[in-house]
Amino acid sequence: MKKLLISCLCLSALFMATSCNNDDKDEVAKKYQVTITASAEGTDITTLTDFTVTLAAASGEKVTLQSDTLKKTTFTASVIAGSYTISASANSEDFAYIASKTIVVADQDLKVEIVLKSAPKQDAGIIFKEVYFTGVKSYYFQDAFYELVNNSDEVKYLDGIILSCIARGSGKEMSEWADSTGSVPVAYLPLDNYVMQFPGSGKEYPLQPGESTVIATLSLDHSAREITSDADTRSPSKLDDADWEIYISTSARDIDNPAIDNLIHIWGTGGFYFMPMVAGQPLALIQLPEGVTAESFVADSTNYHSAPGSTKDVLCVPCEYVLDAIDIQRYGSTQIVKVFQPAQDAGYTFVTGADETAPDYEVSFDSWESPFYCGKSLRRKCIKVTESGRAYFKDTNNSTADFILGGQRAVVRRSFTAPDAE
Image (cartoon, rainbow, N blue to C red; front, top):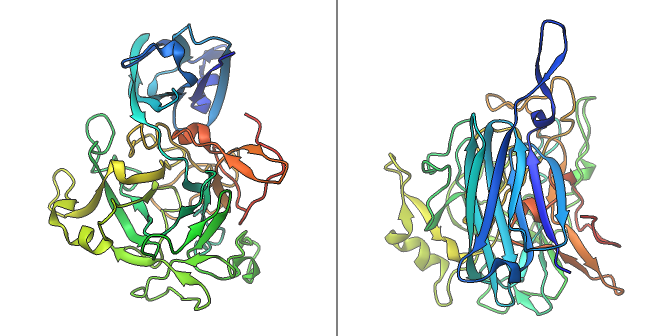
């Protein structure tokens, strides 16, 4: 039996009263009906499997509805006024079908049509398993790590894979790269911060099926850091035995652990260390075409572009070079800037902070007094654990569905004994 999953991620205010009348009686916020009709280009959508439609806002509150048939392809949701992202995905034997669209619900009901377009299924090889970049109080962020896993049943190779942040603006304002729909250019991705690459000429660094590898910003035992005050918090990262380290030789503060192999810095400048912004920034694993070296790619002037209205050239990569991507957004931001095409990531995910239920909880982009130094990571959902203990992870190219929304306490080399509940 085929199942249909419709997930509606709505702002917390979706279910709250917005005002009180003179008699102190709550008045429910006005809601509007959004009707979504889905179809698939070149095929009957009812023949596809794993069909998922998501309506998402910047919060994390999630309502899940299920149906036992794909024959019904028109769905509705009742939402308050605001900006939302619709994403949809499905599969055939040979193709992935994906669509993404941003909508604005204003003062009336809305009807939306989405058309899923096909793309060859990406090889479910090396993907992000867990990424940690939020740091801990008091403003300690050197303990970041990036754990990759071979999610396939074949040996894969780390050689030449590039790890990079993607430019998307400061968070308070719309990204300078975004067009009128709130998306970056469709043909290429602007790289940001330090761009790092695994060494190797092709088959020097194998990753066995189910095996993971840990990349440390600083390969130290951060969990042993001295706690100096009641406001300080212990780090979850013991990284002195990481597999790889990101050492920036030009940084005044970076430290090299000589016992750990380094990734290669191929382009870019940033802060003192490689890492996304603690409030969230998209990440990508990139593979250049066979025969194209990092040196030749960086030296090719046609790979540089500038944001609209800017004269600063930035190294960019074609979207099809992306192996895996996480569209990490800032929790609470009113600007949802979609960085990746649906084929790379049809949704997005986020970390909520230490205690988003606190009365004074507020995301601040004007100072470092933010809730993001919370020790939480973004972690991909486990969908299967074999009798031998091998874990498989969800990879639908939709981070809203694939990752634990809001994050969890970071764990280096997290193990699994059972799959996550959907």
